[in-house]
Image 1 (tube, rainbow, N blue to C red):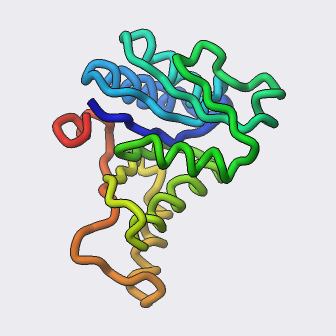
Image 2 (cartoon, helix red, strand yellow):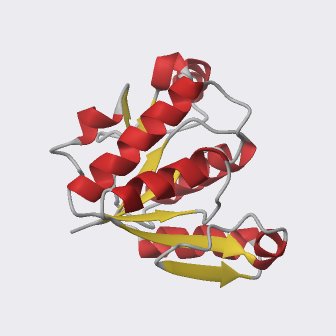
Length: 177
């Protein structure tokens, strides 16, 4: 079974539709026998994701920097909680621990994590699959910008796409789930 890394928001001030998709993602990970690797947070979509995985009997591995753990945002019910010194170490550890990456809705941190794995794949540091869940068109503007980067020559087009876009987690069943 795979270790699926999911990047998502720590915010709770967002539409319930994003929480619903996140819970469905968590349930699918657990039902398919996979392990969740995520940022180790108990708040926002991050917390909802971990809870959903565990409610369906799945295993969760959180990776969180000490500074955030001290602020008491860590999900202490994690099956394994890896504490790092920095955010950069957190990303490296999450990438190393995982077999595939899924990005749900999120803010700056989510974008940072997704762009890091995308860049590393483009440069040949890994060939792990990357999926972007475009809930209700959340990432339409970003996808347009990514296409603009290719179109204007700032990013080289690749024969095999570096990432796949889906609209809902159930579309991942049979691919990684």
